[in-house]
Length: 209
Ligand SMILES: [Zn+2]
Image (cartoon, rainbow, N blue to C red; front, side):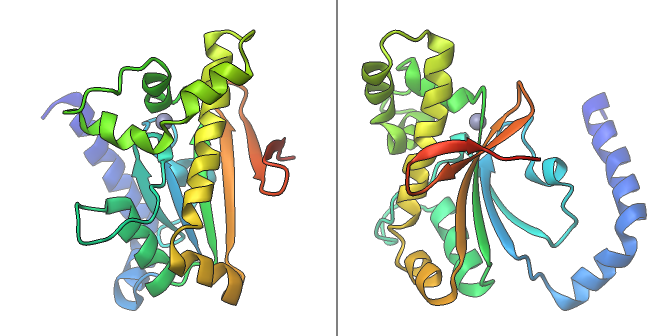
């Protein structure tokens, strides 16, 4: 076994010791998480580690660049993110949805550099969800450098995901009928800061911690 795998097994041993009681309870009574979190697959932004959440607390979907596709017919293709949204909202009846974006996102960087245009690439097809971002960011901020463009693009992509959430009828219904919260948060891992999208102004405001 290599060192990376050995470290994971040792970590699991510590986890099992720490959570043996709650594991028992979770195994017999099922899961009742209050929050669905859509995050990026990036290894630095693990939602449970970042928030200190315990087993059973967060229902998590992670994908490249924490994108939410628009609602599309279920009969065509395979919809991993959409099916997780449906399960969390319709079956688990979560009270909150958090979309968690982050600084230094490799998916957004690839999108901004135009290297996601290969029609045979899964990432290229996936990143089309945010296809409008590069032209918008560059035309609205011609004087800024690349790093600033990436940062703005990461936030713009979050806005698209936030908007796309509203295209799912079951999410719209949960917001209207049972006041489910939907928030978009941006994690600046360089400065250790969190920003929240104000849905009315479409601006990001720093969260006081
Ligand atoms: Zn990312």
